[in-house]
Image (cartoon, rainbow, N blue to C red; front, side):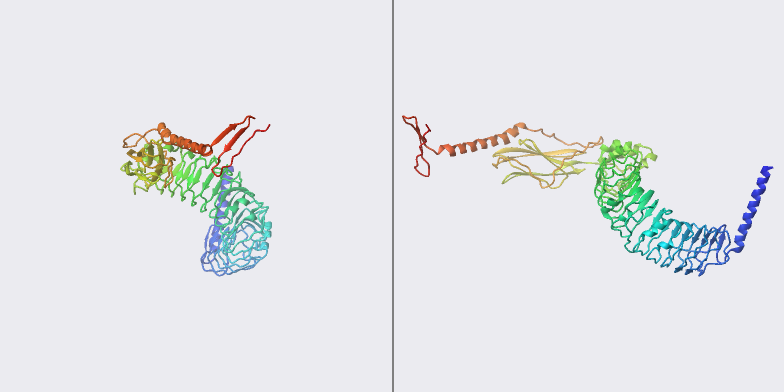
Length: 605
């Protein structure tokens, strides 16, 4: 019996709904479409609000018409409307009572019109979730127009010069979302403008801000703040540390040159720093974001990332570093940030991934994208190719490598392309006598570019290192008639090569130094198990005897000569005559070169 009653009740409800819908269909305004609780009169070239709008509608769409004015109580009989769209209607004038009676209205769209002012009490009695007034001719947001409850305010691309504090005072109890973006004039807000609000979203992009002191005292409710496309520069950090409750922070294109560790935020989970001028990230720069889950640093000028760069951010899952100038990336970062699941390094200058990182890439379980870098595909990347081809296809898709920069159009993971290295060769090796000693010149070539070293004997087996095959000169100064042995060594992952030469020095200076026209660096390339080719010869060890004969003995000889000269000058040019008289006095006749003066020295009695 109970089931039968329920069945009849549902049937009655269905009939009533059908009758109501039929009423909508029969009362639908001319030129409009009515479907369910929606009346669509958009883009019909209407000049006034249509008549015969059915009662009980929820959504009324009037956008894209030519309704220049909304008069008094225009919609007062349609108190069931929840969404009213009057955007792009060329509206020029509103009345204080244009929307009175719409007690259930939640969304009001007035964007893209020609409204130049908002009348007092425009929103009085309304309880709006959203009010959009973007892209109008407004030069001010009249605080008295906002005499109601409003959750979200969208006022983009206006010509406002200053916002009054009273605007926020009228709305702070209900306001949660504020979008005031790309104002056509520099926008001025009083200090602490948002004090007392509890916003969940604040977007102030492109407003020519040079400082953001108006944010002092803002307490966000785990919200999103976007200050992108302003002129704030590094001054942003001086204010942001006084704002609490930010969950997502966007500071794209604001002229930042550094990341300040003065900023502190335990609530921050995402930070966007695109299109700034950041060149370096120091170890403690992201100390403020211990709960950070994602960092976006695209389009900066960063050149390198160390394994400890994000050591304070153990919860990181996404790091976006595409479109920088990164040449060096320490993949040991995977061992520090073990929750990382996405690392994007597209469009950088990375040339290789050394075999020393093999352990860390096997440890990593996320996505790695290094497409469009400067990868030079030779035998140094054989380990990476072997590893990626050894894992199943599903796992391999996590690694996006792309094509190599050199050789052109070379695919690292293609089984048709073989990775090769070229055993180094000594290209030029010359030594010659110069005025101050012996000059040597050594270059080599190979793939990868070899490390060039020069060994000189017997002068302590001096070793000068230079990586690459550029012009390289050195000068060694030594003693007279010293026979010097030179060895130029070129070494890379494919093997090594050397050439020997010797020359007897005719120069006599005894101080030995070395100089170079370019920076001296030491290479520590780890050999791969797949290195092909081999060199000839073996490098000499240090010669201790050479140090003694070539350096220490000549220096000691010079010191002895100098001491002898000093002694002769002091005592050798004097003629001393000592007489002892009967009183025990001693007479000392000093015959000086500048006269015959005799000085007698008598001891006191």
